[in-house]
Length: 200
Ligand code: VGL
Ligand code: ZN
Image (cartoon, rainbow, N blue to C red; front, side, top):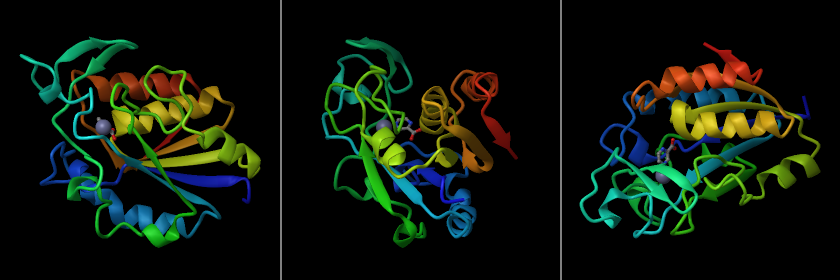
């Protein structure tokens, strides 16, 4: 069990009802995530943490609307409503999330020109966040993921973790999805194909 960690993705106000990029029913995951923390020796929280002029925001591109695709330097990027701006209320964790239970809070997406869905690599799939080293140096080999959103930051993190050789479980019952044009189904299929265990 000491080789296990619980990785809780982006349970922040902007992804909960009333937030700037609200995930339907997003806040429903909070009680179950809090309860599950007690079962793990290590819990890590991630926090989407963007500058106000972040390149993933549709507002930064003339004539573009949220949820459109755009080519950025590293490839295709979905454009989002402004969300999780550093230091603002929308970027704060949901007030009921147990932050005291976390060993590490990892911020991501703080570079203006590049998004970071995954907790391991930014969206160029090359720039590391440092999480791999943290986990490996602590001897962690198995990860359980939960949080928001299933089909973006949770799935990207789970897929990277599996590629890096971790044994990965995603607690779908403790995740909620954005589901853009079938993204929930396609990401669940991709995770299954990678050998990730999806628990409901
Ligand atoms: C996320 C879109 C943009 C997520 C973050 O946490 O899934 N999605 N930024
Ligand atoms: Zn974001």
